[in-house]
Each structure stands twice: as structure tokens, then as C-alpha cells.
Image 1 (tube, helix red, strand yellow):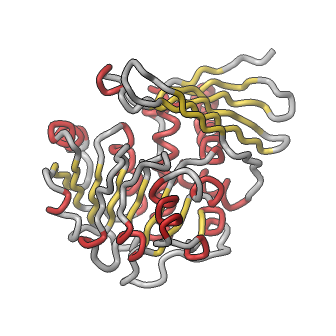
Image 2 (image 1 turned 180 degrees about the vertical axis):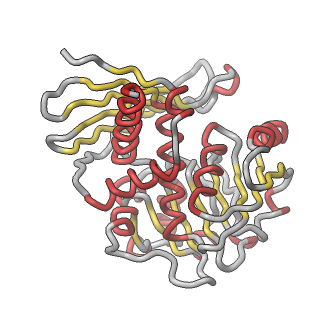
Length: 322
């Protein structure tokens, strides 16, 4: 029996090259070889903290090549335990023999692939000369989203907002040696009208991005709000923007940022311009002009997990052979 490799969070954290990972995910979306059933999404009560938790099962297969399934729990109240809200593991298989090739730490895998997918979308949707970014949210994703966006665009200035200003300052401190200038802010309104890209990764149930503040030419990256009752952007934002999804499969069903505007008539399904499958395979184009406001909504997709697992597994084997 082949050895089952254990790929830790430290390995993933220390061996991520976002240019490479973005390219790997783009290739998987462009070739359309991966079979991805709708993910299992199960909310279950957690009376101890008076809040629901969520179990996600996300399988994917690339026939005769590889396969995998991510098992994740999302517990929004984990802050009180000084723990991240996302916990889980990824099991990576040989698709021919069905044997397990590796077990990867899923939280790190998820934040890296999520950030890479947002940057991939930005490469189609933001202006090529985008030089400023507002990061809304201070969770595990924020640092990775900042780094990933800076990989595809010439970001010179980053502003960070969070409900806890100390966390925003901590993120800025952790990125002080990057090539861009990074500044914590206390109010979203301070900078939302000035920046080229707005990235939002929160568990908010009320919109944080308000359309009345937006300016022409901006790109909005919505990464959080993974439930139907969560929202990061208001209806005016949706109505002003050209809307794109990571996938139609999940994007139309899972987040309040899309579900609620569809239900109240702000958005029609036919208004949504494209998903990453169509963008990466050149079936559809992204930004049309410098004036357009573009919006990308990500809910996550098992194809991204499989692409990332493949990337980290191959890198793990390569580095182990050195």
C-alpha cells in the first residue's frame, strides 16, 4: 500500500506561490475535465453558543487522474474559543485505484484556493492598472486575499477595516514588509469611494458595501456571506454592477448576496454575465470598459479544492525528492 502523505498547514502556508496556484486553478476551470456534484451543505444547531454550525462535504473527480473530498465545519462563534471558524480536512485520492494519496489540512487549503480564485476573477474583471485595495474583514482569509490580489494587479496601497480595529492593525503589522503600503482604517466610508478594488470576507448578515458610495471602474470581490441570510453588499451595489460568479451551480443558491436580489427582483439570472468556467475557457469576456463596476461573488467550489490539493501534493512530492 502506498504511503499516505500528511500535508500540514505549515507546509501549505510556507509553500504557496499565488502565481502558480492561480494558474493551476485557471487550468482546471478552462479544461472542464473535473466532475463536481453539488456539495452537501448541512446546518446543525449548536445550542451551547446559541448559533448554528455548518457541515460541508465537497467531492470532485478528475477521471483516471485524481479525486478528493473536503470535509469542513464552519462555526461562526469560534472567536470566543480563540479558534478559526473553519475547521476540516481534505482527503486526496488516486482516482484509478481509489487509494488515499494524501490528507491535507483543509483550513489552509481553503483560504489559499479561495484567495487564488478571487485573484483569478480579478485578472478578468478589475482594471489592469488597479493600484489600491480595501480589505473588509480581518479573518484568516484577509491576508491571503491581499497577497493574491497583489499578485495579479500592481497594488501600491491597501486599507484594512474590521469590526475590531486591533485586528486590522495586526494584519497591517504582519504585512508591513510587503511591497505595498498598508493602513488600518476605522470606517469603511473613509476609503470605499477611492479604491480600485474592494475585497470583502466576513460573516455579516447586514451589507457592509453600500452602492451609494461606489465609483465608476471599481471591482468588488465578495468572498464571505456563505449562507442565504448573509449579505456583504446591498441591492444598490448589485444593481450598479456587472455580476459574475465562481460557478452558477453554487453561486445562484447559496449566498444572500445573490439569492436575496434574485428573490426581490433586483437581479435576474440572465443578468449574470458569466462564471469562472466561461471566463477561463474564453467563452465569455470580463470587464468591457474602464467605467464599468464589476462584482465577483464566490461561494467556493470543489474544483478549486481539487486543483489546490493537486498543486500542493505535487509540490510536496517535488520538495521531498530534493
